[in-house]
Amino acid sequence: MSDRPKSMSASAFWIAAWERAMQTDLRVSDDTEEEKFWEEYAPMYDESNPLAPYTEALMDAVYSHLAPDDHLLEVGPGTGGFTQLLAPKVGKITLVEPSASMYKAFYASWQKTGYLLPAVLAEKWEDVEGIHADVLFCANAVYRIRDMRAALLKMNQITKRHVFLIQSIGRPFAGPLTLSWNDQLYERERAIAISEILDELAIQHSYRTFPVERKNGMTHEVALIHWKPRS
Image (cartoon, rainbow, N blue to C red; front, side, top):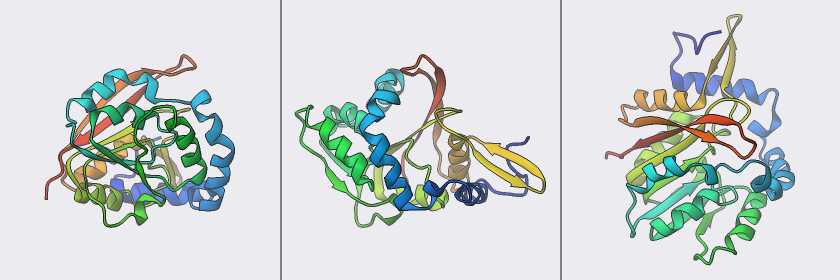
């Protein structure tokens, strides 16, 4: 088993792996199926699979770059675990959350915080237009994006100061990209593929991993990908 075909770019591999996954998992491309999943799973997400509470060292690396007057755009906030950590560090937050069920869970959790409710764009990242922010933050929310090159380029274009992408590594918390090609199976961790696509775009970035012990006692690596956008 190899990482990816030598003749295939990281961005092309991402699309090919997405199209392969689409054939076996309706959630990958079908918005209705994705929403059905979150209707059932969102209310119990914080009980079964929270990540934010276990990322102190990782988040300290993020906090050091934030300013009190920053406008932060969070893509895929889920139930708001990371949003609640970020809220005291910035001046304003806007959310990008296409799932009504997940936002319902976010709202229920947020009501307990006492913070001002962030504005929300109820659409997929690919469809977002007309917004700019000082900082962009996204944790484990890019699994349904087909064209990662375009998605990263868009993040770079709309953000003024910092982009932070958090991506879990390894099963069962994050399955790798997989592709059968010329009778060979290829696998690539999403975090590594994202870093390679940024290289394709000539976007200088840092790639750091942090060991995170989850609620069930399992320890795995979580990547923090960070860059400063350039015009």
